[in-house]
Amino acid sequence: MSDVFDLTCELIARPSITPDDAGCQGLIARRLEARGFRCEALRFGAVDNLWAVHGESGPTLVLLGHTDVVPPGPREAWSSDPFVPQVRDGLLYGRGAADMKGSVAAFVVALERFVVAHPGHTGRVALLLTSDEEGDAIDGVRRVAEMFRQRGERIDWCVTGEPSSKATLGDLLRVGRRGTLSATLTVHGIQGHVAYPEKARNPIHKALPALAELAARRWDEGYESFPPTSLQISNVHAGTGANNVIPGELQVLFNLRFNPHWSAPRLEQECEAVLRAHGLDYAIHWHRGGEPFYTPEGPLRAAAREVLAAFAGSAPDESTGGGTSDARFIAPLGAHCVEIGPVNASIHKVDEHVRVADLERLPALYLALIERLLLPS
Image (tube, rainbow, N blue to C red; front, side):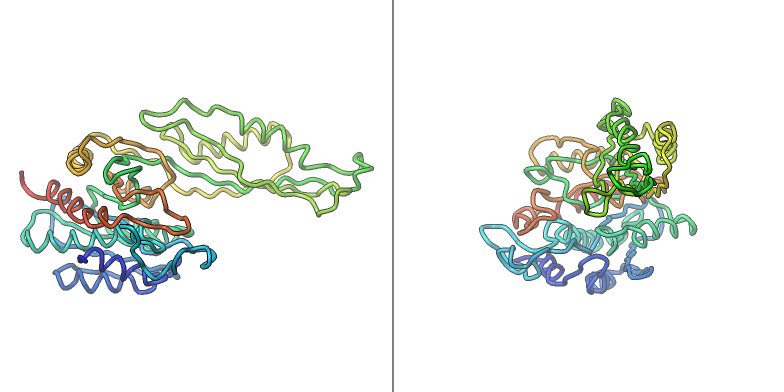
């Protein structure tokens, strides 16, 4: 086949279930060091991160990815072993094929081609990988970004290889992401017999009006290309399992996906004001997954639009939809960030796959973008 196909297969064959890198980054570092990259292994806790740089000064373009994958689930549900790459009908199957070992392999091949063709290029080109994107995302890019901030590491542009395309390679350019804020809410009551409610305090009954208000609230009308902020309750749990016992405690999990109208601290204040207004006896734990980011018009967005139009045959849709990505940790460093990758229809599913034809084209796509940004016009 090709370099990118072979490397993708090598990566899929390593069962790097988050946060285990399973040797993926070592393999990549050895390849890039052979092409003159300075590679730095950054291990925090159980997480491996790789920072590989070529060039000395000037604007810095970072290709951002992850080597970890989500668990495959029951192996018998797959048509073939999820960690034995297999091609069927023009599709390469395996866990991580689309999310995102195919993109990582394409990054590596594009970087190799770039420095061979342009050894004295202006600026710096870099690869940043983590094994903690699919998991807690604590000791991965979040931690690396903190280190970069402390040592003054400059990043001008960042291209994340998340699978962003909808139907065909290059049909969507992601130019931002919503922020994410999660809460674990515990509402305290008094346990008792259902026949004697006056001797108990039902936390479910107490919490329902507040939860209904939070769920029904129209937080905003959207922001530029961002959809409106959304609060979704994902789990409600209470009770002992007996139908004659008023529970003493209710636990609720909810998440907000928010646009730049909001910050996580402001949303926390708004939500807790509702809880207090309803007189709840509660405790709440917040997890700030990341603030929203948005890349305005500029060199990166213009270059990405032109390159994708050339590959897809028409201008891409430009979107801020979807979940979140590690670019949320790079954007606060002052970088403009976009996401470009293969079709995302099979990610996190049984029989995850990528089109071999798309995989073969990805290195050229990334190479064209690197050249457009770092080479004099």
